[in-house]
Image (cartoon, rainbow, N blue to C red):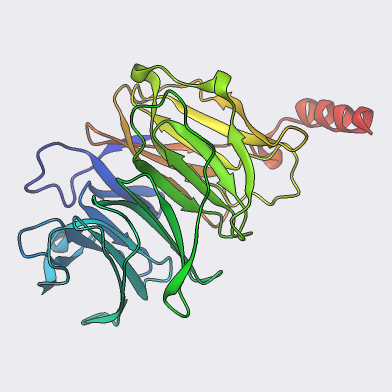
Length: 320
């Protein structure tokens, strides 16, 4: 199933998708400079010359794109990235001047909680936030990924990445938190790493999995896979050629292994947005630079035919 993104596109130089959700089985997407408020089905729009944001309806027929409120001068320079919490109560904004601000949103007003400084020169490029683990993760054009305490609004740590030899582009592209165990996935340049909640490196992409420029990852997202699932998919990458790759951990070698390359290729241009549906983890929403959005269904045991299920169970018994 695929659709074309139409919400929040006005004024964009391209048709890139920025965020997506499912509403009654239908994909709702918003433009590249937008972020969805999931509980209320509204969205934020940012990046304008007012150094602030506006709040709009994302669904509702004639109400789509209608402006609900405008909030000027939230930063001293244009906002470069925005991330609401899953419950919609928190908003974290990153700026072109490398600062981060944390806000509480009550449905009408923005209340500034803190300004966070720690990145070197350059814009903030990616953010994730978890109210479950009380954590904010930010990535910047400086290539640094920093972890902040959402409860105390203070700096916690810098994630120490392996030396990235031979990689020209070192900006942080994506950061994503596993909402079940607090693990943090990062995409720096074209290499993914996974850290635990305490900042220890769990696994890194092996050098043999380096990508050519035309195949490099353009975004990535962590799944909520439990850490005890040996072959569980912990991260998904979208690539500039439209590929989707699924990754798991080899705990013996502490490396990330590419388990699957999605065979049914719907997209042929850079993937710009990914979202794993949090309630069942069996649906992946994908958006690309052309505005195309799709839903990928992952394999679940209850959808397997009986003979295939029996074969898998026999294989599991043999492993023991």
